[in-house]
Length: 462
Image 1 (cartoon, rainbow, N blue to C red):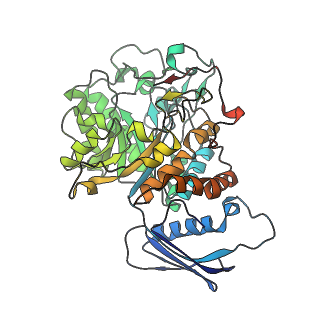
Image 2: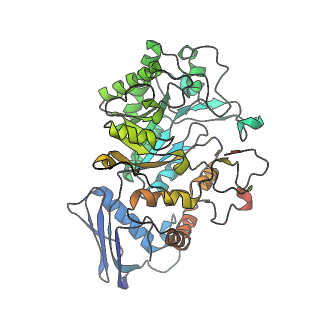
Image 3: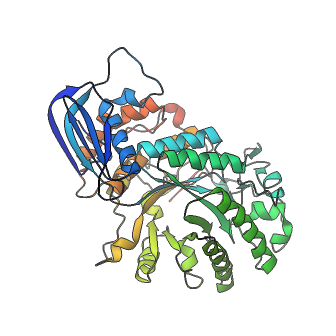
């Protein structure tokens, strides 16, 4: 019997039990840790906290077999657990996945489903990229045009921008504040923290289309293209005040300590743009929150006090931030960008980026080797990123995410040596049947199903 993510200790015994409902107690221990003991008489769980008890139940669910992941019980056979002892705790406190709902909107029911999928993999952070050039997804009651105008675009680029093809089909959607409060509460019940992101001062054309005074010149509308956009926010104090008001409403909906403010890919970025980021970070600090920004915010002046850096262009910015006393989440694009193509086969749908195979993700090490002493403690963990320029549905998201997200879940939960062959055997034998039971349309290990291919849609492989 194997588990995924791999536990600290798994000891198989002899026999089984049909008394599968655990008796839970709480004991001192590392956060999120637990110990399961299954005897022929029943199941006991000793957990350090409620999160540990939740993860113990996820492990028991894994031990019960794939049908335990179905929405309703099937068959007449009662559930059976093998006699065993499992001792487990996570390696990192930040085990995240970023879902970009700005480029392609993910309806609420699909977003709630992704919370369930993260929780089943013992991931505990959902980073929601809520705004970008192509769409604004967060209801701001003070500024209704942000969703009235900024939440939809008349068409979308079809495939890579260099082919100059478009869908000719409108795309849009947004979440009300109550929708997002529901998502936050649903996630909290599953010990997932939702980290929202409103991107400033770049990636802002949807906002500028709604309120042109935020920009620096005429804007034709919400952007229908992909890539880095030259249209950015102006640096007037009135624009900073506008966003202070936006973030006031954001922190009212999202109670978590960490709030994303973007800061990435600002053409011609200067220290003045860094001043915009620091002003918003200071405003968040006044609310008792910590700013979470992409690593470019370190290029335009000192990092705000308490800021968490998302190191995406590589590990270098993360290492520098750690050595300057800041906390870091590792998410380097060459290791954990799950929108990147999964092989060099022409059958990969809309192939973009470098090849990032399942095995590549499983080999990733979030703590750079040059960090020593107490420095690794500043690495809060890592997150995988799902950018959705080319993922326009839940089915496409499933294909890009799984089973690579399962490999990533093992990386951020489990320590020690990794055995690739053993992992692949566990995955194929035990975990893919669970994904089948959950209805996840993952990429088969041998390559895409015929209906998962998108022949003729141009990509841009590197």
